[in-house]
Amino acid sequence: MIAVENLSKRYAGGEAVKGISFTVEKGEIVGFLGPNGAGKSTTMRMLTGYLPATDGKIEIAGAKLPEQSLQVRQRIGYMPENVPLYPEMRVEEFLEYRGRLKRVSRGEIGARTDVVLDQCGLADVRHKIIGTLSKGYRQRVGLADALIHNPQLLILDEPTAGLDPHQIRSFRELIKELGKDRTILLSTHILSEVEMVCSRAIIINRGRIEASDTLANLEKRVQAGALQIEVRAEPGSALQKLKALPDVSLVSEINRAGDWISFEVVAVPGKDIRGEVDQLIKKENWPLREFRREKARLEDVFVELTQE
Image 1: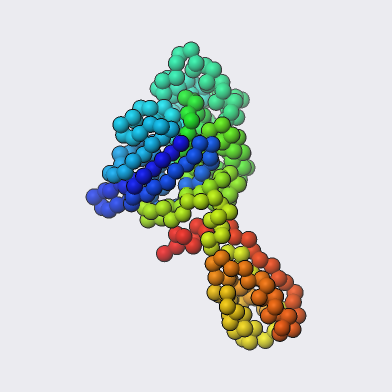
Image 2 (image 1 turned 90 degrees about the horizontal axis):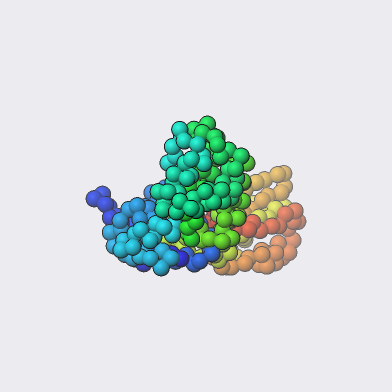
């Protein structure tokens, strides 16, 4: 559905995107992640044809940019971070107007408007003035605008920005439902949202792709799964003996409660240290009150791949 090869964007002040390559297959919901200034929005604007690339190739659903710009735009529904709406128009009126701009035929525009109003939960406000709607409903209008011409691909840039937790949950379910019959590229800073919605993530940093893989595989790349133990032992001696284990990269004291001391023990990448830590505890005859491993999260992956 999306094929990007050696894509670059240079400005007078420097290079925002530096020869990136990635693919998104038909039917995937893919998270596109990166810190501020990493090149996310620049890349998305190039994918949608709003910004010309300096170098590289872009192919969207079989059409190439910039040679087939109109065909690409017909196959993409783009929802930018700041959705441009006409606040003085009614919801239904706005969507019909946007549909005509996107070359939806006169005979189809009414039916398509009804479909997207229903899909986006806007049927009850179809006759309301956009300017009177809440932020959540305005975001839904922006999504309905992206869907009005029935695109094969949705590109969503921070679609839940500014929404409250209830609105975010509702919007997340809407995205999952839309992903059943189309491809979605989702850019967001809410990493839990990616974990709940996406099957794969692409992480960009300083204009380069740092990782592109399934969430499960990305989580295996970090030193996550930090082990937390609470034992009764002499603090200095316990700390040194834990650090001396061959597959341990870091040991930190995190709490003391009377004679009990808690440590966070981090393994070298790709190693499971539960067995050797357990053996050490038994060997030293330390009374044990807690022994658990924190599961790696996408946040851990993101921080490790993008931190300075």
